[in-house]
Length: 251
Image 1 (cartoon, rainbow, N blue to C red):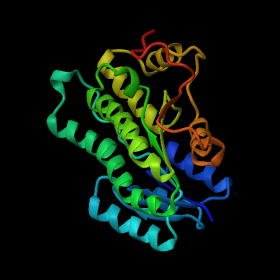
Image 2: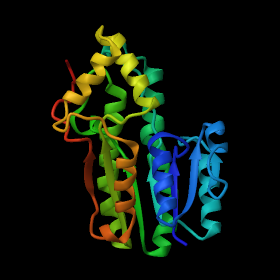
Image 3: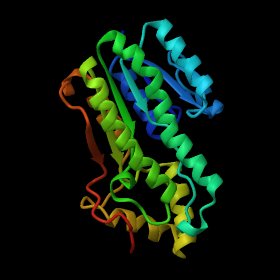
C-alpha cells in the first residue's frame, strides 16, 4: 500500500490533505501537536503527537514509518501564522518561533524522509508554502520569510533528490477559509484599524476570482502532486489562490 505522511494533519489544510490521500487509497500517517484533534481522526489513520521542530521526536516517528515499510509521499505542511506587526515591533523570540516551526519543521521532515525515499528509488515531497512566500506580505515578516525560504528548500531538494526518482514541489495557498485564517483576519483588523469583514473583503478583492480558497482545493493539488499523474512535475511553485493580484489587501 502506498503511504503518505502529513505534518500538522489533524485540522485545516493538513486534515483535508489527509482525507484526500485516504480517499485515494493511501495509508495515512498524521502528526500534530493538538492531541484532541488527533484523537478525533479516523481510527485507521496512524496518528502521532509530534512537534514539527522537535528533532528527536521527528526522528523517532520516521523510524516507525521506515519499519512499517517506508514512505511514498511527504506533505511538509506544519506551520504557524506568527506575529502580525510592523518589522520594528517584531520580537526576536516570536520571529524564531515562527521560522522554527515553518522552516525547520519542513527541513526536519525532509531530512528523515529522504533516506527512505532514496532507498525505494521514488517518492514525492510536497511543501506547503504560501502566496506570502512569493510576494512577501506587510506586517507578516517572519511568516513571509519562512514561507519564501521553503521555496528555496524545495528547489534545492528537487535538484538534490531528483536523480533518485524523488520529486519535490511547493503549493502556495492564498487565503483559505477556516479557523486559522480567522485568527489572521482578527489580528490584521486590529493592526490596520479595520473590521474583520473589511479585511476579509480585502483579501477576496485581491484575487482575480474574488474568492477565498477551500482547504479541499489545496488537498486536491497535493494528491495530484503525490501521484504518478504528475510524474514529471518537480521543482515547481504552484499557487492555489484564485490568482492573487494584490498581496496587501485593502478595501
